[in-house]
Image 1 (tube, rainbow, N blue to C red):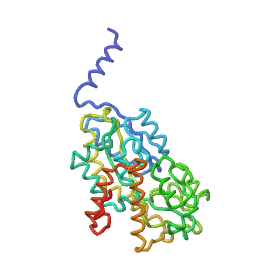
Image 2: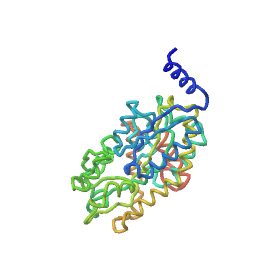
Image 3: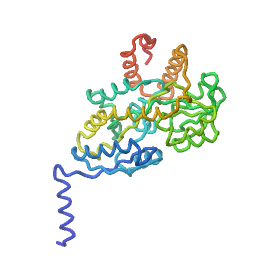
Image 4: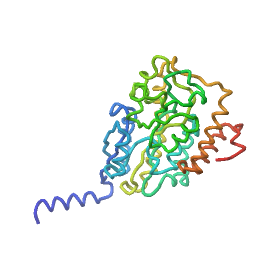
Length: 333
């Protein structure tokens, strides 16, 4: 037998032995590239994963759409991207980012921990060979406006809003407030806003510096301090490409990074100068809550963009924190 054939057989035998890790590739989106906090977190994750029989390599992307497409095409075994970008793979997981459903980090932390503690909850993170193997907070989503006088729903009528064209929920919300949808993605919403092609855009504070949003806020813009949703970064994997039980161990590891991620987000929020923030009167909040609820119901019942099971879980978590909310009696979700 030729020497090359012997070497090939020996390598195949080694890879078949227990404890010898196969190689998997992760496509990781981080708007700041390799200098970003999310990239650094995934670097730490690869070290932990080696103990679970996975040998991970990272491909970094500053364009989220390309990362998701490469995952779908099988060019990588896992992808780290926003929940809304991964909508088409698992509606249960993507509904975490439902409009108005999570407006503080404590609720999201409870949800993430439930995926670790309760196998019945974790089971819903698997769908058609894809498995959500980790969730990290990427920040509360706010409305950035070029004119700070736009601080009520009525004033959004007729205004142009940069809208993620792959987000099934966004067009419904934009239409409800009477605004004009201008299709965008994470690569184009910043330039559209900064150049005045749109009057407003929505994003978490993590995007403020990488996308230079201060350019669009000057000279009279602002950030409406009303959380529209909770952005998340999610690790989605082709389950069969990873060792048995990898998803559960991965979710537990990411749950342990939750406070680190929140601290990083709050650090980015603090970089937005106080002069830009626009506060909404407390008396207006019930009206916004009701509007968000109606949008969620439409997206659950009419377009099927939201998963009803996840909406029900999130309502229970909100009501556990504040039982005085009207939704806790009505139980529409």
